[in-house]
Each structure stands twice: as structure tokens, then as C-alpha cells.
Image (cartoon, rainbow, N blue to C red; front, top):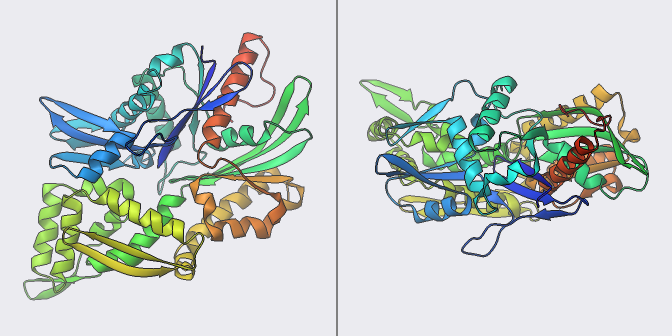
Amino acid sequence: MTYAVGVDFGTTNSVIAFADARGQVRSVSWPTAQGPTQTFRTALMFWKQGRALGHVAGPQALERAVAAEEGERFIQSFKSHLASPVFSEARLFGQKVTIEDMTAIFLRHLFEAQGGTEIAHQAHLCAGRPVVFAGARPDEELALRRLSDAYRAAGLARADFAFEPLGAAYWHARDLQADETVLVADFGGGTSDFALLRFSPSPQGLDAEALAHGGCGVAGDQFDYRLIDHVISPRLGKGADYRSLEKILPLPAFFHAAFAQWHQISWLKSAKTLSDLRRFAECSDRGDELEALAELIEMDLGFELYQTVGAVKEALSSAPAARLRFCRGGVAIDAMVTRSDFESWIAPDLARIEGAMDETLLRAKIGPDKIDAVFMTGGTSHTPALRKIFEQRFGAGKLHFDNPFQSVAAGLALLAADRRRRAENFSPDKRISRDH
């Protein structure tokens, strides 16, 4: 019997981990054409199926996205909409699909290969949530209500929520032999989250005191945005003018602002948007570039572009320069990107992340010299410029990196097992409140 489950529902990837009563953790995998994977891409593919909607998620959604079949809609990074009161639903093939519906559909697919969501009826389930939700002005109460409704609709009504960096903290501290004050920095696709905890091993287990938490809605997706905005969009008509009657006017910024953000690309594929874009192309001296942008959107090439941008970003983690080459249909982009340029583009984002970290330490009234260890996790933690901030602040010797994609889910599974044991023993939770 599965004793406890940890769920890391991420902006880019999602992960599940199981824990038994002894605290042994097992990360799960999903089949793909290339072999099993332990990360389930947070993506959905929809198509019309009679009067209903057909859909797949994760690896299957990616396979269909690459195949680029007509009459399908690929959606990714939809977690970024949870805290937005502006976005509540989408019309897919004439049917209304709310953000709660999308999330619930995705969660059901996430659990399908693991025995279905019925597993939550026999196990304690701990679900991660960001400290600060993504978005310009995130509504936390709205996001939590939507997230709770989605878990309930998916058959996971008993989900117990916890901050994502708390899961990573539990994973880091699982084998501690001495007291330690730990700063956890969890860098995902949509958010950068921090948790500061003091761990104390005892004969009864691991005691943990939550000192402070913080975060901001800036992470890997924002770094992708900078690459698209500086390298790709200028080659697809960004900054173009068009003629209207006898006037020369600038192209509305909406097209490229939305295009550069993964969670908005899907919504550009509408008859009106594409018609407007092509109308502007006919009246612009950069019409070929705008036609290429319309083709990229219409052909659902967002995921292939995402892969290209991700590969360049990864290459810049270990090389001073990387080539960004994207050739598909009528879209042809070939450019060299240097790490120094990339770091200059993301400098404002790094400053926001550093500011969120400083605020977390300030809330706890603890200086960097009092931190024993800094545990960095999440795919964006590989970015050299980001690591440099922490090396300069805390010293390279204090930085720890382990299992960047599975640590949150694995730690949440440990936390779920811990909470279940305490509940079964009728022991009050004196260590970490439910809100942390």
C-alpha cells in the first residue's frame, strides 16, 4: 500500500514521488518513445472528438505537438494563469474550458500511469504550491481556490498543500546528523521560491522550525522570454511599422509581447488575431517577417521553438556562446547568442530574484553568515549568473545541489509521510504549520 504521495505540479514539468511508512522514497516514471522519463511535461493537447474534446498530456502531448497535426491545440505553462483574474477560461473548438478544468484534466493524466487518482484515497497526499504565484499582480487567494477546485475535480480532494521549497528542504535534510539552518532556493519555470528553516535531529526524528519564506514570479520562463524578445522577435517583425491611409504607424506591441511568453502563445491562434496580423503584414515594409510570425503561430510551432530556446539556454550554462537556429516552414532564424549578452538581458530578473532572497532573510532577521547551507534546486538553478549571486553572498562551500527535478516531489512525499505518522499517533504537529 502506498503510504504517502508528493506532487510537484510545475509550470514546465510535473513530478510525483511515493514514500512508504519507513520513509523510503520512490520517484515514478512515465513511458515515452525515447524511453521512460521521471518528469511529466506540464502540457496539454486538445482536439475535437465528436461533441466532446479529446485530450492527452505530458509526453503524449509533446509527441502530437511535434507531429503538428491540423485541428489540434497545444497548451503549455498554463499554471502561470492560476493567479490571474483576467484569464478564467478558453474556448477550444467552441467549448468552454476553465483554468480549473485544464488543471484537473492534467492531474488526471499525470496519475493515469500510476494507478489513477484513486491512490489518494489510501495515501496521504502533499501537493506543492509556490510561495508567490506567477503573474504581474498575482491573486494568491484566487490561485489557491482554483488549485483546490482542480485537485478536487481530479479526484484528489484530500490533497494537503505545502510550499514547494519546503519539500526541497525536507529532501535536503533527510540525513542530517547535526543542527543546521538551511536556505532553500527553488527555481522553476514560473516562480523562484525561498524557505528558511532550522533543522534539529532528535531521537524522535527531524524537528524543523520554519523561520521565513518568500519568492517572486520570475524564473526560467522569464529567461526564455528575454531570449525570444532579443533574438527571435526582432527577426519576426518586432518594431515594424505599417501604413494606414497616409500615416505610418507602429505595429501594436501586443503580438510580440504575447508571442514571447509560453503561456500566451496558444491563445494567439485565433482567426481574429491571425487575420489582424496578416492585414498588418500587407501594409508593412517587413511583411515577410510578420507572415513568418503568423505561420509559426498557425502551425503550432511554439513547442519546437521552446525546445530550441531551452537548448540554447542550457548550452550557455557551460559555453561562452551558442547558436540559435530555428528553421521550419517559412520561418528561418539563425543567430549567435553570447553568454554575456544573455546575462545582460536577464539582469533585471536576477535583481528581482536576489531582492526576494534578501527579503526572506530580512523577515527571519538572519544574516548570510548565520546560514549553514543553501540548497538550490529546480532546472533554472543551473544558470551560472544565478549561481554566482549565491556564491558571492554565502560562499561556494555552502551551496548544495541534488536531484534538481525530483527533490521537491520527493521531499513532499517525506513530508506527507511525516504528517500521516503524526496523525495516526494523535501527536500534535509542533514543528511546521499547515500553512508552511
